[in-house]
Image 1 (cartoon, helix red, strand yellow):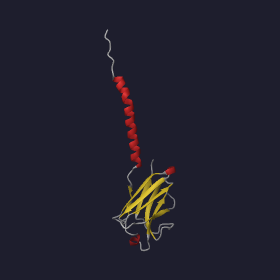
Image 2: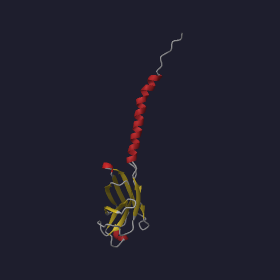
Image 3: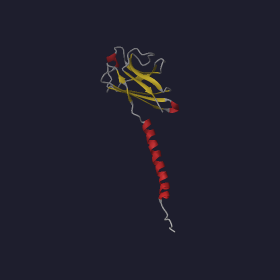
Image 4: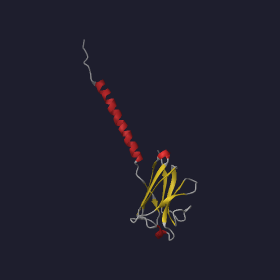
Length: 153
């Protein structure tokens, strides 16, 4: 008779299960964080503002709303593009719906501007136009920036 020696393999395998589960959990958590920390999307700039840069970032907000963050740099003062313009207005538009004024984007002395807001929409277009005032109900001039937003989460 040949007595079998006890082996540690099953014990080692059982000891590794919690460690593997912890690693998988950490990987999933990191992927979720990276999803929420997505880079802002570049906005397309019009040919009359070639040196300007614009970004839009859409993320999940409270109650399922979309947090919208718009940033622009190197954008000329609005009156340099349109004589009657005093401010840039940000618009959003859902497919086949009218454009909605969601706020004015005022430039600082460094020709940078920003607008942070919330919308209930997940899929829409964004545009920035030079306007005579922040309360206009429809765009009166061509867009200097445009982007399409499709928040997936």
